[in-house]
Image 1 (spheres, rainbow, N blue to C red):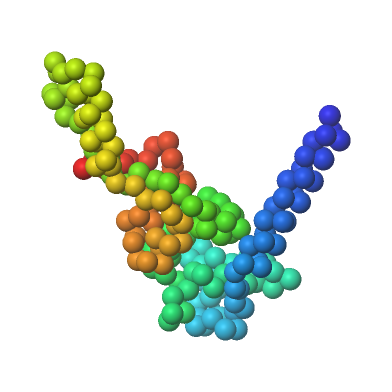
Image 2 (cartoon, helix red, strand yellow):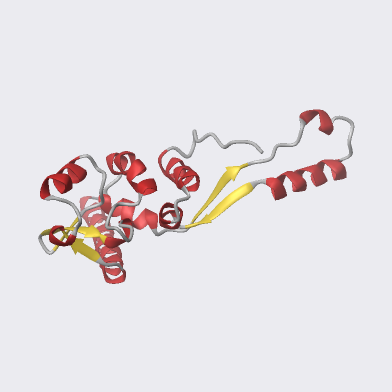
Length: 171
């Protein structure tokens, strides 16, 4: 039993290492020396989980995708990083930011009074109309954050951190 458990853990470690290697190959990372932050600002940002940092080759590195053209962490991302990094590892957040999500942003709910005394066919039609009026986001969380769409990014964060209790607004 113990050998099987160790084999499983080793397989998971190899899978994670492969995922990290692929991610590292596909993304740019910056060292502290090229960031637009003073050493004190950077230390505070890391300590307060306001910036994503990872260890690469024994050095603290910062994924370039989190920075706008002025070298600042995108505001939508910075607003939620403390919660995200408190709940998950820096690598988990990196992977999640680039994983396509399908999230309901607003849903239409048929008026219950309209459902009284109608046929099944009419009920199905009302359901179809409600589905068509439901607002969804299908995309990567990083795209919502970098485009400045903080409402969509907030929904992505809630979907990750609190999926069972997320309140979805109605149209």
